[in-house]
Image (tube, rainbow, N blue to C red):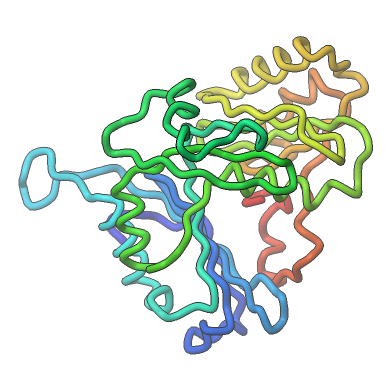
Length: 287
């Protein structure tokens, strides 16, 4: 049994052939505390599996005080337990989930000024590297940091793989999935582990995006109400779409429903097929 992590989701279609990964794509979402990944069969354009593993509480090892497993140790153990992760894939894409990111309009962006853009809002630690993603659909750039240790570890196991920011993927995914479905402002609330992203999208462009920390559901409701009040949105008419780690019947869902009349849960990308085994998960989870 894994010592460093616990699988909270472990779903894999029985048709997956671990010896035929060259026809599959691997998409990973990593943070300092957890990792999720899914498999795409390019021949069938079908998502075959999804995994979510969380790092266990750090423990002393070898009796050395203060010795803790690293992210590389965590990644190595997952790849050791799931040996097919070390096989060659057709594509490997990795996204980092972190707090420090900021959007810059394309007309203002200059890659030579990336550190100034970032440090305007955040303090950069010495062990963090600065990256940027081009969000072509929104004519914007995302500037963000990734710990150097995570970059080195992911590239050790998956060489020549580009790392992007999770919020870049979230924004692009909402744009792809909803650009032809809505023609009025919608709030999109994406719940993560002690963080949530709030986005306003009207079907053509994004007018707001921010990430908030939280420990309790009441904090999510507070920030949501505050943003709606600042932007003069009527909670009786505005539509709210929930994504990520939230489901109908949850304490958070019930709380939000007190303040917003029209709440929906997110839908999966219609551009893919999905294994029946993923029906165990709500459609808005792991968006």
